Amino acid sequence: MAYIDYYKVLEVSRDASDKDIKKAYRKLARKYHPDLNPNDKEAEKRFKALNEANAVLSNAENRKKYDAYGEHWENAEAYEQAQKQQARQQHSNQQYRGQQGGQQFTDDEFSDFFSSMFGGRAQSQGRQVKFKGQDYTAELQIDIKEAYTTHKRTLTVNGKNIRITIPAGVENGQVIKIKGHGGAGVNGGPNGDLLITFSIVNTTAFKRDGNHLYTTVDLDLYTALLGGELTVDTFNGKVKLSIKPETQNGAKVKLKGKGFPKYKKDGQFGDLFITYQVKTPTQLTDKEKALFTELSKLR
Image (cartoon, rainbow, N blue to C red; front, top):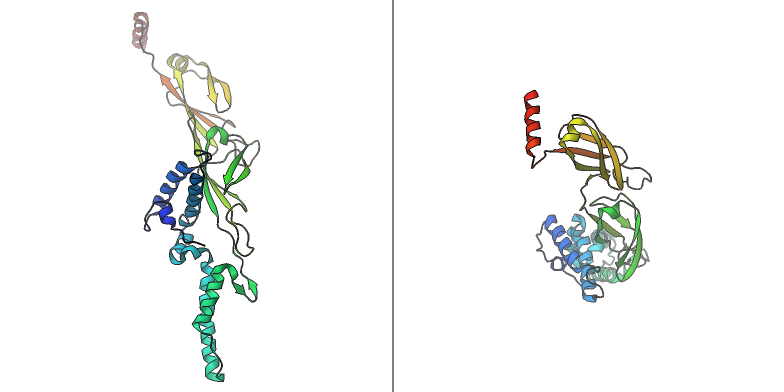
């Protein structure tokens, strides 16, 4: 495996914080995303490299191994275990040589062992050591209206199209694992996984908090004072509400089951919370001003 400087790929320094790495990945991933660069092989290549670099550096344990072992970071545990085995073997050979005059293994022989291990020919009790492939990470941006319903999406990973089902109710920042669609395993080991982080774009009048939705609705002064009916928008249609007389500015009502779908729970929804914002009339006519003046005297 050729050495790849993941820090250079993400255009950050080696002492970059986790926040800096995340910010750099998101910026560059958007820039080189295949959807924004159709038929651009160089952009596709760069996007793959970004995912690979982020998968390593965004994970504290993986980053520690990478800093210590470079391109061999995935085999760090096997390497450390082999080092311990070497130390034990050397100690055992020293004892045996002192007792029996036997031969001790040389450092060159163990160097051969390490070389063979990182060349993909590691042996453990006569069998090849299998390693799981590298996990890939990606960010998928979808509109909140898409997140409201279960739908399918085709992704391109390493030149292959993967059709996935996105369940209704997926949340912003949620990570979904697609098993076996990461890097190839070593020595017959299992493939890594594809970890997709969702970025939900919301341009609606509704604020989402988990499964609940929140919105503000304008209410004219006369309906607020005298009561009446008001038709309001929900996320998937309109409903008619009954307004109580003397409704105050900032009053809230809850519409049960009119919120967002619950993730992987068919037919279950959160609630919609509506806050009334009473609007004061403007550009009053002389007659209206006179009537308000008369009303104020009665109060």
